[in-house]
Image (cartoon, rainbow, N blue to C red; front, side, top):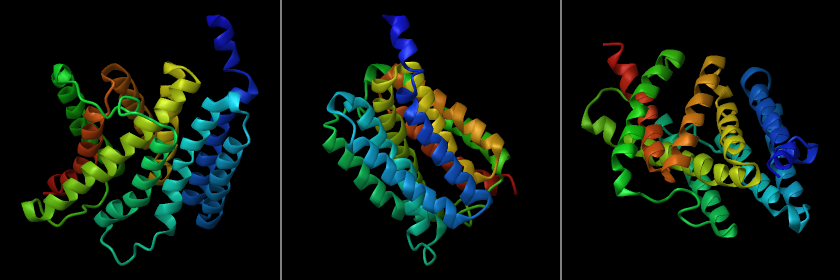
Length: 265
């Protein structure tokens, strides 16, 4: 039975979700290196293809339909970021504004698919507090490493409480929590159901990585893949996205707020 199940994952129909990752990656490459409009058009085509494909699947293929549906959040992230009129806002506020449609989409999927808090890791086990704290603390290291890969410009003018309070909150909620709920919560839950634990985690980490192609660094894409892979197994082990959400938020705080000012001092 185990051999037959493993063999089934190599059937063309079962690999269709990976084909859509290739389309997302191609769209990201077009946006980053060739033509924004063409990349955006491919994301829109991919978005509608995912929804249409899911809608026409037989009811016995419910798990594949659900996975394809949640995958649509990947192109939606990029479409929202390119279509939303953000020029009049400070860059740090972009995360807050873009999170509104993504939170709406995520909670709609949770309702439609009847997902429970346990399904997407919105639980916390106080007996594993030390493990969650250890996972959360990895964000400091990840943020420092990614800073030396990307060298982004600082998003705040100084390290005062007034400058950091709102951006830190935005980073924790609108990047750390939101992105982990989407990727390690909703998408990984569906990917693991459709494939299995190992392939589902690999699938989610790959999709997460290709969404960072716009950073224009192959090293960063590889680094993000391994971070996503670590987050995936951390969620599998703890059954919670709390630790990885804090780690993800800390990574972005160190990357965009702290290191660009500290390292230049």
